[in-house]
Length: 341
Ligand SMILES: [Zn+2]
Image (tube, rainbow, N blue to C red):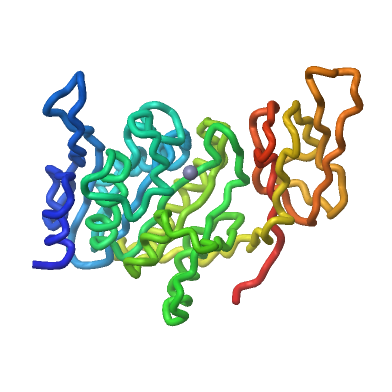
């Protein structure tokens, strides 16, 4: 048996789909969850699988954070079209990966407060969120050649629709990797730096030697129609670029504007509690020293607001939604142009 199959027995999560069977299947991942209202119950995470012929496996996930909706909506639309797709390879689609968080409309799980994207490699005998992370790391990723995990800013942030590129550590696969990025064709591409963070889906994919793409396609806890259109188009193009659609023309590469977050100077955090009045809009080009906004003290409305200034130059790629801020809250972050290395 393959390594992947032997891992299936190690996870406590089971499924009624057979990843090796040809054809279109829908079913659930069953996360054991015994609680006061359901002694022998499980959390049922829906998924769809399409397999035919031989070719690569693409794993598509949304709902890693439960309040980000462009990915789940695009993937539900894809699932509806999957029975008619003539593919050579396999698609595994999970629109709401951290299903309890997704159904609760929250970043983290209401059951265990788990932030799935900080829980890899997870734990077989852990909380539901840890078990989901463990299943992704030990079962789903080993089945995949390429994984795409779709995000947005969630309730507290809004992102310029951006594909996040995490080029693999070995340079041999860079040409293929950038072909996939250009195949997705997002208007903005940001080079992600894991900065040693090894608890994310991206880090799990790197550990498993898989090519990994993710992205931020909106935010504010809404489904952004512009971001959704980019995701739908990008997923379609990625499937074709990977060669999963024989006879279908491979889309022309469409490189996006390549940017990078340049460390601490690209972030602005609230220095004190208050009400923040931003002096920028998403997508603005701003300069070092420029006023970023003003912080008001609602308990002393007669007091002069505090001017907050950008400490670097670049494009506003992510903004906070809530005007009320506490010290340490991220108000905005920037990115600036970079080149492929
Ligand atoms: Zn997210």
